[in-house]
Amino acid sequence: MNLVHIPGPAVMGTNTFLLITEGHRAAAIDPAAPAERYRRELAAHGAALKAIFLTHGHYDHVGAAVRLAADTGADIYLDPADVKGDRLFPLSWQDAAFKPYPAGGTMALDELSFRFWHTPGHTPGSWCIYVEGLLFAGDTLFAGSCGRVDLAGGSREEMQASMALLKNLPLPDATRVFPGHGSFTTLGAERENNPYLQGLWL
Image 1 (cartoon, rainbow, N blue to C red):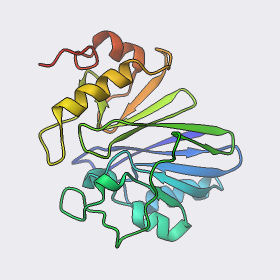
Image 2 (spheres, one colour):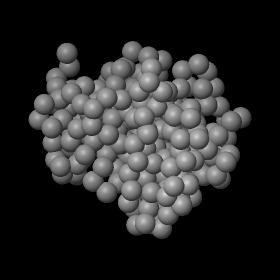
Image 3 (cartoon, rainbow, N blue to C red):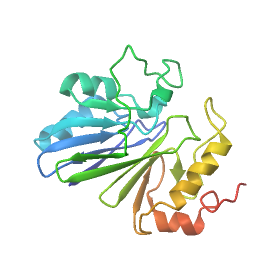
Image 4 (cartoon, one colour):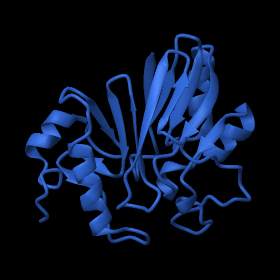
């Protein structure tokens, strides 16, 4: 697998990614940069985009999703709870036929096996995505912190439950964590040092 990190626009600095399989198929996670950035990387790797995973529906995580899906035929996976068509959650059912995350929480793409966990709190439709030792945490888990719960659809109680879920995932401490913003980290470092993952709310 090739992992390509593509930062979003500088103001928000969203971490976005392409995962490219040995079979030259690809998945995008939170494509917030201009669509051309992803098309260039796909062309450079001779890869076809097959899936677009949105960790949640906020405007700073979804910017290129509909354009890329139209250009490539890739499916967009987004929790229906985050499809609202407003300023904060800009995607609507008129934009595309979004797919829910799969029942049972798993999906294969060539050699890659994806697992998905529903982690509401930042938004009702937040999800974390695991593949090959990597956990893409969106705006649920940050290095040393967690996502905001004071925006529309946020919930402190749901975030607390999601933190407990992430802490107890059957994943090793060496699992690399890629948040939606800021520095990358490991699950072990967060289990040891992140007060929110330890159940301490400041």
